[in-house]
Length: 195
Image (cartoon, rainbow, N blue to C red):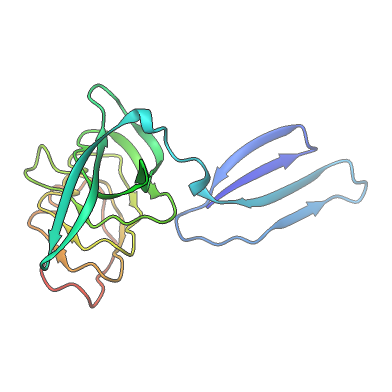
C-alpha cells in the first residue's frame, strides 16, 4: 500500500506502509488553516514495471497432472533491477505462470499486477533459481494461484516474515538456504503437502 503525503498542495512526498498494513485516510489541519497534511490510499499495482525490462519465454507448468500454459518472466540480459517492483500478470494477453531467473538483482519487494495466475517460482540450482542471492529481497507477494516454489527459489534473500498463500502445495529443497535476514514469523497453509 503506498501513501502520498501532500503539504499545502505544493510539495509531494511518498511514504510506503509495510506490506499488509492498513491505514485509513487521515486528514489533519491546524486552526488557522495555513497548513494541512493529507494521506491518500494508492494501490501499489498501479505502476507495473515496463515490459521492455523483461524477457518472456513460452512455458508449460505441469503440476499434479494439470498443464498451465503461459509465459516465464525474467529480466532481460544486462538489466539490473532494484527497489520495489510490480511484475506484470500478462504478456500479449496470456498469463505469466512462472518466474524465471532474477538471481543477484537488488530488488527489495515484489508485487504482482491484479489478475496474477503465477503457478511456479522456478529453481534449478543455487546460482540460477528465481530470486537466488537477491540479498536485499525482504518481501514477496505470494499470489493465491502459486502451487510450487522450486529448489533454491529464495536462496540468500533477506526475508524476516514469510506468509505463504493458501493453495501452495510444494516447497522444494534449500528454498530459503543462506538467508541474510532473521526470520521471526513463518505461516504455512494447510495446503502444503511437500517441504
